[in-house]
Amino acid sequence: MDYTFERLGFYALDEGLLESALARPVTTGYGTPVYPSLAQAAAAQSESLAGLNFAAPA
Image 1 (cartoon, rainbow, N blue to C red):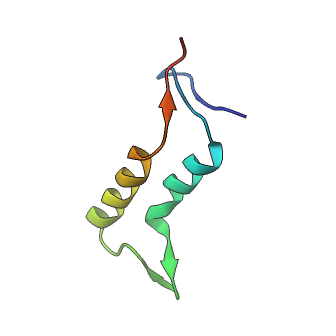
Image 2: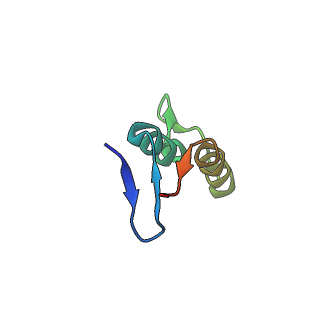
Image 3: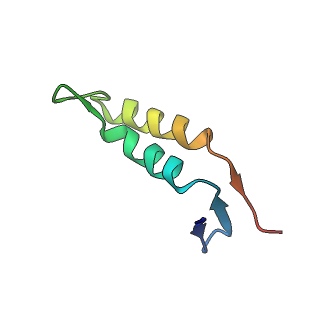
């Protein structure tokens, strides 16, 4: 099932990868945040989203 961004006109080919990328900034390890600052969390999420394959409908 494609994850549709109707407003932007894009879709991600793998919904699971998108959910994983969006969840990465709130990851914890042994009860402590992996990305303790807002800047680190934003960078991690940006890196994850940049690696996804998005496509525009033809």
